[in-house]
Image 1 (cartoon, rainbow, N blue to C red):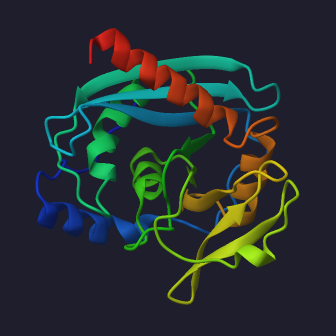
Image 2: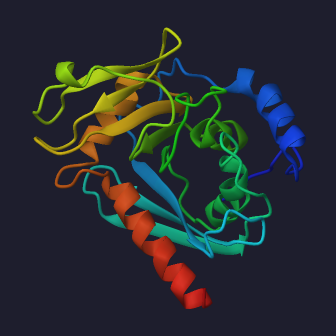
Length: 233
């Protein structure tokens, strides 16, 4: 899969903030996105060291599934140094370069990317899923295990599978709190690029038939950990 990154990767906070400001207007949160995607990819990373330093080892994994059967059809991994320290709100710069290297190893181009992270639900409205979607040109969604910004009314969120409530920050709906399994903690869905929130949530629910997390995330998480272990980290 060919991906041409249209910018250099910043090495400091000021450069990263400036790049987010420049790319933010390019993210499309209105969609409509793929209504019936054939292939859906999950992306995740595992860390060796985990100290928040630029020298931390990062193992990235991408798993492509047939959207109808959820059977894996392609996979790729990459390993590198993070190259950027941990800074709240700029976490994507630790993961994006190695995730893109993993994507370049695919032979099947996905119709939709699901990231273990945030999209619009980000203090600067430009999380990992936004940046990844803008750079690749592919529709992208953030599916996070925990919220990074925004609040919601937990009493309004039903216990049944498919229940959802808006995730709101500073009066703006930035995502949706979605229950993928009855009686189980929800996930936090936000648009990244090229897709609207309703369509994003519909796909996340379809990709989560048995577990809290989408199959894309579960398989990518497992593969990234295997890659880290095999690399010796």
